Length: 282
Length: 337
Image (cartoon, rainbow over all chains, first blue to last red; front, side, top):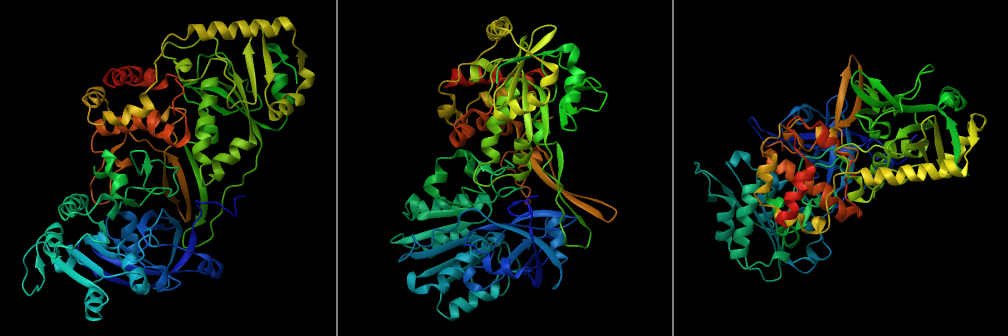
């Protein structure tokens, strides 16, 4: 039964490459994976902002943002922070190892609506993972968008993900990148302070601009306040939420914020929608 | 198909006439009355007010295997499906609950495990003639003899049951047992109807739900959430025994070299239910969890599927170890609106 169309049954994928983004207790490792079945590899379609349920048979599954844009190729990237049993086991994977992937889940950034606009991303810590695909997408479709600005911070320089990419984008004049660390450190040439403060320092104009933010809940709250101070309208602001999830398609119940399911109605939300839901920023 | 009579004396013959088909019916398990598969010698236990555990676990088992695998392998084997069966002795409130939950399991993406059991089984109700003290089905669009979600309805007429097939599935099932059934008289039908009416009048508790679905989220910061959850132990019995609660967890289980990915009932009343990997919990205390439980049933579910996800079976009131009463919560909600 259910050979076709069992939404709980994942595809098998092989790890092609892995590397650490950050080190330490809560290290972040990126897995680049490719589906074993050629038909799935060809037919799989995801959009920037979506997530997937990845896991290991015998250990379990975790919902993780897809951290690459479909414009990058026929593979998937997941940047996983080592937190619990599943993510620790995912960290043990080496090239050639098998894992399970199902999805993609959720809505995505409305990239078509945003054509002709300036895009600014504001990320904190691992929150940069769901923002990376939109940056890559805009980069690959640069003709359709105006300036791209990346604001990104973490506790220390060692906690920043995708580090080399920002220097490369700045050097190639693809994006204006602003990095920050929370605490002063020797040799750090960029901003010192929290991401919401860096946003005020960059002081972007809201004119014809879309701002997208993702990070820890407390950071998101202050970024939203500061975007309002900078005169961004609610509908110019997007965020992407993550909640604990088990199924990914609106059955298991737990990811709701008010009457919306993060796995189906999100993870990408416009601030105008989210503002009406008190639980959204809990 | 007309209504028929099944004599209580012939219950064993009736069960036998259904043949090899799986038959689930209420059975005693210690102090607990719950639906289980009838063995050859078993007779359905049909003399009860309501079962402790609702029949939801026939279609949505407390734990079920999604697929099995060998450790180190990549083949995932799903359980054999397609078995046909029948569930007998369902109270109308619990049948309505299944019909309410159908919307969720068939919404956008079909849940094959649930839907296969829903379509593979025939659901035979047993009209409720003696509502329990905490029943309030009539406040929520139900009734002690409601037929929603059922393929046939039985009514206890002391030494016999009046059987009324409601769907093609129900007719087919009772045709199998035609030999042990008798034709019902007009008098039988009339006495069943009278009992149904009397039962509806016996439902003692009620709530006026008007305005609740639309306005409940506005009471987000109301004091009542603290008050009504103060004594909650977070045991989750209100959700486990709720016929409309459908939340689940997915976990891998390993024994030796055999593994299986399974799903099991979960409860929004548990802290871990929403706990983020970071340690952050959007619903940190029982206040937020109770608020979500009531909002989900009485407002969010209405937004998504057009119906309140509560049938008034009263189990959450009957079995709460600290006497939290959903009708009391709803009364406070009404006052605060």
